[in-house]
Image 1 (cartoon, one colour):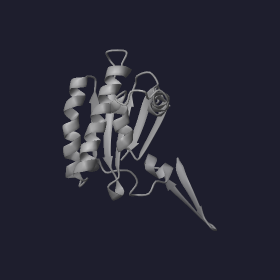
Image 2 (spheres, rainbow, N blue to C red):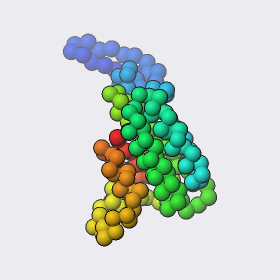
Image 3 (cartoon, rainbow, N blue to C red):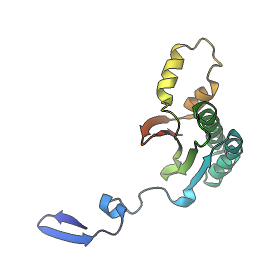
Image 4 (cartoon, rainbow, N blue to C red):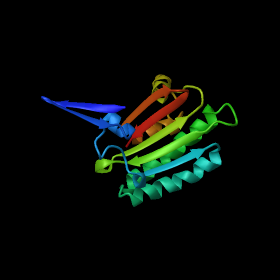
Length: 164
């Protein structure tokens, strides 16, 4: 397979050597591996211990202590909620990735194979019934710390992305 690039009257043909070349991604696309922290969980105990690693990772990457603490807290809340309320079988898994991007942007990504669960829709439903200020406190903490929350369900996987 070849990539054909036309610029004005010129035509260049190059052999395809990687998916990045097919997608024509810039050289600096993505986040380097040393700026990511990844883990996979199946139990609440595994998830609880990970929050300390998140905080240390963030601090090591130059994230201020307040955001590092919030990232750890959000990671713990999300992971425990997914495992406790979303897992319906023993063999389900939750994958967590923490990215530190350009300009110290902090992104938390949660991916699990449980039933579809849109955190944004859940928040809307619970906001309407907010008689008890302590109800769904974990979700409230996540949204208070987040600049942006996105959700999509793809290939049988929940994907929740939180930017802080």
